[in-house]
Length: 380
Image (cartoon, rainbow, N blue to C red; front, side, top):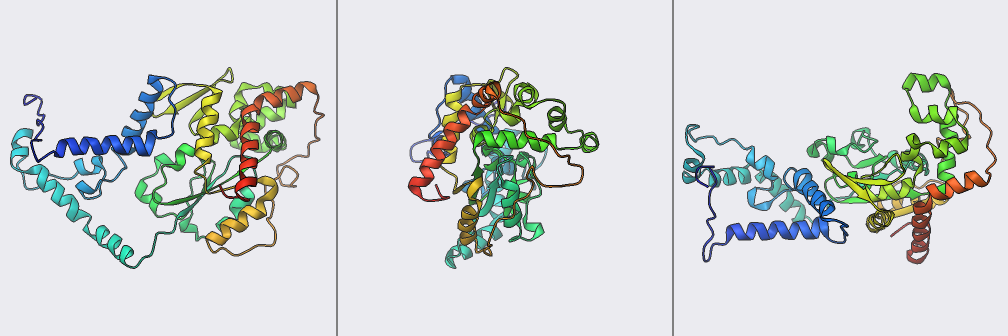
């Protein structure tokens, strides 16, 4: 170990610091990531643990023993005051690690003081409002009304599943998040969160998406290079439903969004992505993950009852009441660069395709409806 610059364990009777650190890590991994999850294969479990360690634990999770820094931030601290010519072993012997720990604590003393003041004043941090907007469920209308309550600088500008590309310190500044985030992405939002989402009848959601895309003018499609609307424009409904290029928008989209990180393959099977790893996942596993994540959503609403879900969220965040929810971005809106299109007849073949594409979404939708009826409108 000395040749590789590795310090051997310093644990001994009465000083079990190495063992305590590993026990703490194992406990955090089990309670924060693995609890409630079912892994079908060892490769699936290995990929999920790798994703947790590399993308969260080492780079983002804060630790009290190193001054509330993440391990990567702690390792990046400068080793000022110690000769660069010393070997790793010599630096360890001169107390570099102890110095870096003290420096980390000092570096965060102002934050610790602020936390103590907040505790003494009994002012709990207000949760961030997170609208998980599954496409074509009515989220645009709800977003419009929620956004009126926040200043522009309090609203996160990212509207797609790219929150992992934003610095966590930047994400802390925002109070309102709204976008087409899958559930996996929501975990990157720091601090307490109040998650809101809307569900819609699965068949209605697909039809709304198809006709909305089909209404796009050719000028608009060419200007923004919109592949989905281009396919809808060139095909009829049956051809559209069978096209693997738009499967990401048609195949059980609500369930996949709630499961997080589940992608559709060309044969309409599913793969789960965790970091740089991906593996096949069954329908049962997709539904199980979605239901598990749905249980942690604070407010769940339905596109036909948006006023009720808004009223509940508004009461929690002291928002201004509204008499009605303004419906935006519907397929019947008359807008520039949008054409008029006629609804197509739903024949037996189309019904069969719609049933196949929504088999998981319909199950999830029924369970959510039943749960909300039992527990109260809009809250899980």
